Image (cartoon, rainbow, N blue to C red; front, side):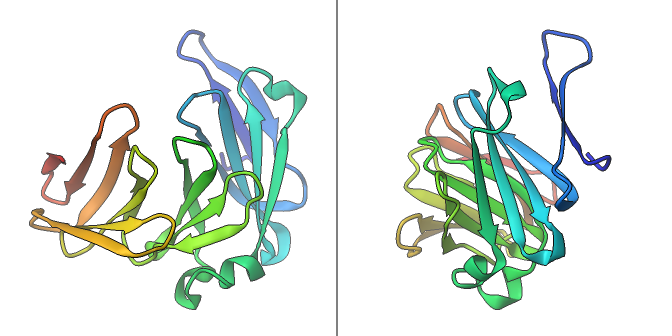
Length: 195
């Protein structure tokens, strides 16, 4: 949240069950995400001075013991993978792949790229869309676009595999169901498609 804390809530209890303060060498608003098992969550914060970002990984069963891993994703590493017009965009979200060995970083104005889930090394860029997600089999990244299309990319090579058409307008959100082989997308005219 904007008070520089990350809070953990449980649907089984009233109120916040944990509150973690951010390290002093970070800036901006943090964000967090759980992996597909619900056993690990990541917290991402920007480094002071625009040097990059921290990704801290926590065991959801023992978060009070602190992060079990800290990855530093340096700006220079990001610029080696991400096109320059996207490299300095603010990070806003992250998603773990089903295996937990990659993390999809998303940001403002079309920023999307993968990092290694263990070391934080930037791997491949999938920029230019509005939203992005992994497919349930971890083999592809789906990106939604302004022109109503969904682009399917090979996660390892970055090669374009397929373009899906059908939405009449800008696709604002796309999400895959990790349990079933399907994904949903929605556009500005409130159409929701199950693919």
